[in-house]
Image (cartoon, rainbow, N blue to C red; front, top):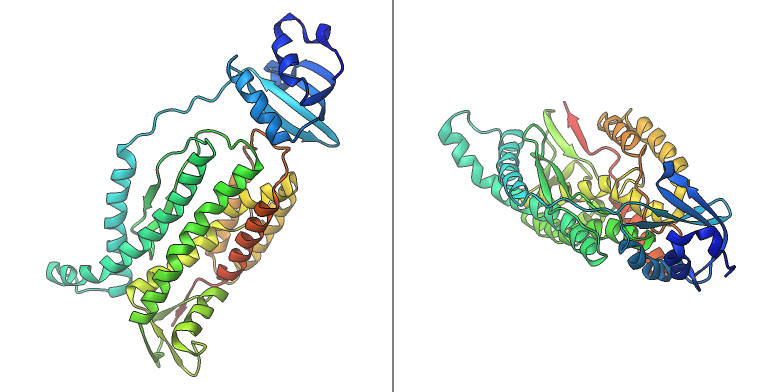
Length: 369
């Protein structure tokens, strides 16, 4: 390391010592990032992940946060005069939202799919049919978010508990579930693992639930007249139906009449595929960013264009195109945005993106009139 002790100044001796043996310094600039950081340009002498683990405690002890960045061909460390202090979680909020979402999901299933008699007794007779649907679907959603939650905690990232989102005016009664990261992932490896853990956990629940539900379902001729809804078919959904029934369906005017548990399993695959869209702040977007970094600013536009084109067939894709546009404008990069992925991480990323292809449903619901 070049001895730049005078350049560091008396107040930064600790930083010079902390960088010794892990970073070869080429230049130092004070007042970076709006005057709140020191910019150190040079070359890493050790794996950046190891370097970050070495440097971070020294910075944290002085109320500072290190950021590792790749700027063109330059490797750069920013030492920012700030630390993240997550606010306490509101423990009551996920409980309230969970209760409301259970009621919302029951309401939606009963009124969208069962169409009971508009009387108290008729509604009460129909509610038990919605319980298997609500329990199955919410198990998938909560399992998905708990995958994110436990992986985030494993990597030292502060997150909220899963928050279910009630929405009784949709066919499913919910807009899914979310957790909010209250601190920044330490590196791309952690970002990928946190992003991938949710869809993997969700699929590990959705596929068995779908198989169970299909075994409770039955085949029947399609109605001769309109006025019904056909669920869309992803590659994975069609393969599971082939496994259970021993034939490709729908075919020859026959389709499966879904049991509520099967419908929840199908909805779980759909929710997973939407989260795996490789753009913006979606799970698939985090996985793709971990793989290709800032190149996602180009892939985001490609995905938005494709979603707009798909909007010709299902208008819901226009909503998703708008969401991807809004939530891809501002990204929080990992603290260490330089470390490369391990071979295992790359395999996980490839598997997750394959799941997106297998679960993608171009036309989620089709109304036959």
